[in-house]
Picture 1 (cartoon, rainbow, N blue to C red):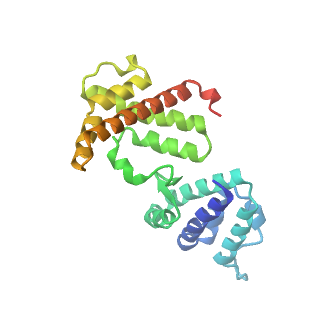
Picture 2 (picture 1 turned 135 degrees about the vertical axis):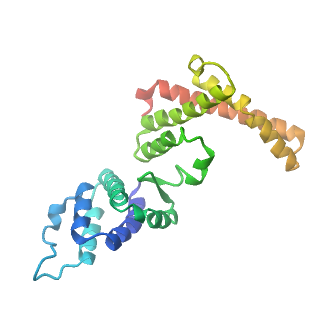
Picture 3 (picture 1 turned 90 degrees about the vertical axis):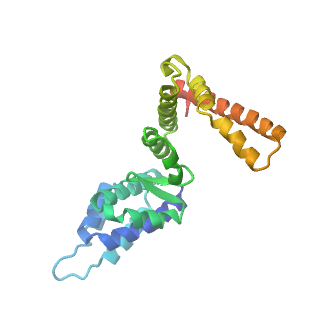
Length: 236
C-alpha cells in the first residue's frame, strides 16, 4: 500500500474504532498494531480530566502520519483484524465503508478489491477459496513468492477436483500446466464458451480465433505460475 492508500483505509477504520470501542480498548488495539502508545501516556480518562476519545483519535492520526510505510501496513492490518475479532458485528459496516474506497475485508483480512473481488468467490469451489484469499493477502503485503505459492494451491485444489470428477487419473503424475490444460478441456469450459458466444451472434471464425488465443493465454499463464513456483528464490 502507498501512503495515500494508508490514509484511505485509516478513515473507515478510525470511524469504526471511535464509534464501537472504549477509550482504553482503542489504545490497546493501537498498541497491538505496533503503535508506540507510550507517546499517548498523557492521554488518560480519569477523575479530574476531560480527555475525550476525539482527542485520542486525533493523537493516533498524528502518530500514524509519521509511521514508516511498512509499519503502517502492519498496523492497519492488525488493527482491522482486532476490531473484527473483538466486535464481529462491525464487519458489514466496515466492509461497506471500505468498498466505496476500493478495499474489502475477507476472513478478517484487509484486501484491495483490485486484488480480490469477493463477488467472484461463490463461483469457485470452496477448497480453493482459502488459498486464493491467502494469495491476495500475501500479494498485498509484497510477498510475491508466497502469493504465487498460494495461488498455485488454489489452482491445485480446482484441478484435483476436476480430475476426480472426470476420472482423469492421478493429477500428481501430470505437470501443473498439463493439469490446467486437461481440466479446462474436460470440464467443458471452452465448449460452453463457444455456445455462449454463438448465442451473442459471434461468427464461427471469430469464435475459433478467440478460443485459440484464449487457450494459448491460459497455457502460458499456467506455465508462468509453474515456473515461478519451482524457482521461488528467484521470484523477487
